[in-house]
Each structure stands twice: as structure tokens, then as C-alpha cells.
Image 1: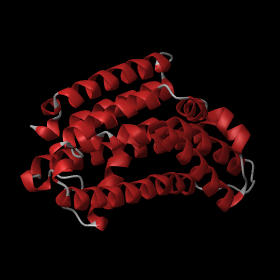
Image 2: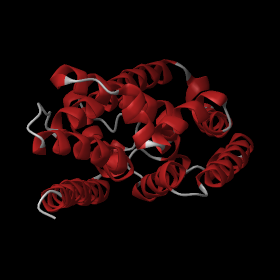
Image 3: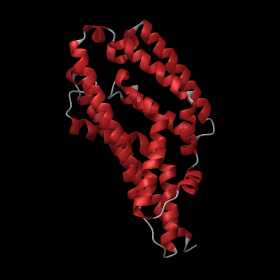
Image 4: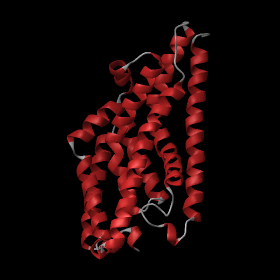
Length: 254
């Protein structure tokens, strides 16, 4: 009892912290989405790189902390057990910081691509006229990726925290940071196109963010995760095909 109680308290504290940070981040996203005007509806929302990345981090905390909680808690439990036995241990924030590093790097890349796309669109009337159809093609691509072998390989690593810990364990601070980078990379491999579709659907479309979060959680944690992923693939491909035929169905084209 004296051994399990501290572990349970620490687990509950970490879970509460993750959910509290996610809830606060959702509040910020809701506030920001309501504060936006028409000038902020572009791919970069008119933001500089630091502001875009700051908002991106808030988005990742809101959407990914709830879905990554099982893996983070498993990591924390292993190191809490090591600490209770008097062995060297690593704080959980090291793993979480590495996990966020992967998503920040992806956000920086997304911002660079968005800036390039906006600059190119300013010089190309064809791109401006066909932006909706390109967005539809992105949706179709995201649906196809849902069915790809790479998606399922990455998802298998995310669905089993214990298997990941056993197969990827590394000691020390640097080892834990590498574990966070590795898990973040698998997570990115699962979900990157689900975040790319925010550009044609609205970067600050909170409703779409919520649906993506529920989908990612279902795929990672629920028994019907594979069926949810298949249903999402069909919806994305159907909606994307419709957008190619009629770009006006996209929120960003209204």
C-alpha cells in the first residue's frame, strides 16, 4: 500500500496536469478563433513565424496531450518505480519536451510551406482560381493516407505504450529525450495529414480540430480505432472529391 499509493498519486497528478493544460489550450483556441477577422483567414493567418509557432504549440497541447496521455503515463510510471527503488530516474517533462519538439519542427515546416504557397498564389492567378480544388485534392490524399501501410505501422507503435517502452527503452536524460523524439515521430507519422487538412478547412476551425482530436484518440485508444480510421478515410475522400467538383463546399471558400 505504501509503495502503490505514491505512484497512484503521481499518476493522477500528471494526468490532471495534461488535461488541465489541454483544457486551457482549448480555451485559448476558442478565444483566438472568435477574435480573428477576414484578414487572418489565409494559410498563415497573417502571423509572423514566432506567433504562428506559439499558436501551433497551443494547438498541439490541446489536441495531442489527451491522445498521448497513455504513453506519457506509462513512461512516468516506469521512472516513478525506479525512483521508489532508489535507482536513477528521469522526470516526465523530458519525454514530453522531446515529443513537443517533433511537433514544433513540423509546425515550422508547415509555416514555411504556407508562406511559399501564399507567395506563389500572389503571382499565379491559376492557383488562386483553383485553391479550392487543390484543397479537395489534399483531403483525398489525407483519406488515402489513412489506408496506407505507413499509417498503420506508425499507429501500431502508438496503440501499445507498453510495447513501445519495452522495445525502445533508453536510460538517462538523453535516452529519455530520444524516446520522446521517437514516439513523437511515430505520432507524426500517424497524424500529419490530418493536420494538413486544417489549411483547406480553416487553420483555426475549432470544430474540425475537435473532430480530428476525437479521431486520433479513437484510433490510438479505442477497440474500434481501425474502423474509425476507415470511416474517416471514406469521408475525407468523398468530401475531397466533392470539393474538387464544387470548391464552394469548403469552409475557406465560402
